Length: 76
Image 1 (tube, rainbow, N blue to C red):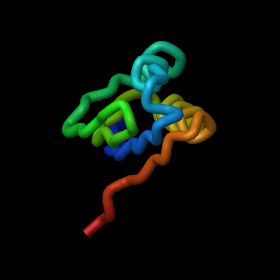
Image 2: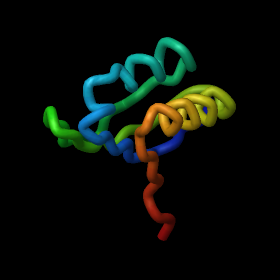
Image 3: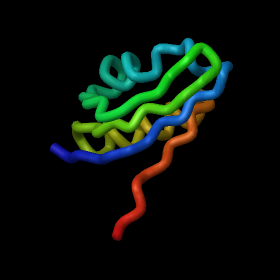
Image 4: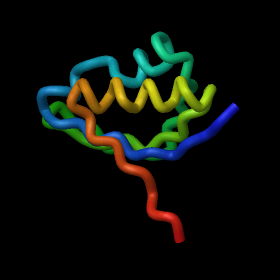
C-alpha cells in the first residue's frame, strides 16, 4: 500500500460535493484528514491518502477534473 500526503483546496462551487467520500468509494483510497479549514465558501483539507498507487493517482486526477486543486508538500 502506498501513502501520499496532499492538500485539497475547494472553491465555492466544489465545497458541497462529496469528494472525500468518492475517493474512498470509487477509488478505494483511505483518507486520513490531518488538518482542515472548510466553510460554505470553500476551504482546504490536508490529508494522507492510502491505497494502491494507481488508485491514488486516478483519484487525484478525478478530483482535479471536478475542480479541486491538489498540492503536495514541498520536499525539504
